[in-house]
Image (tube, rainbow, N blue to C red; front, side):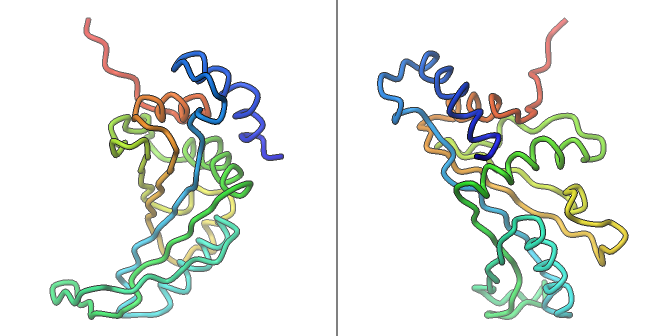
Length: 184
């Protein structure tokens, strides 16, 4: 069993049930899925960018990404409708917990000048979104073999009804949110 899934069942469920007064353990919020996406706009000019990003995202998540195509033509960005401009992966189950474990304990601490995640990046329905500026923070990526830096967006989808419940659950998983500034 994944380490975070065991932590969720043993410690997080009882704590959330007592804090938010859940009578049924099935009503306690849980992680549903994690969506990782990369916008590879440079792939319109050269396909090697898309192939390199696909290789890195496959290595990070353990799944083959889906190629996303442009829905509209945008002349300022030299993008035509139907061009391959992005990649996305949805991880669920055991892979989701293993990805979250690597994200929380290995990748986020390797981010340069990290001061904590923005606690206001919830969407109002209990889902959290964050961005990374480069893929080299993951231990699976060898920076010496990396062809170019590529950012990624990560969305953590939960079954929580409110942002407060989701924030409490994610902080119990170990997500390093910024502390509110204290007035002196």
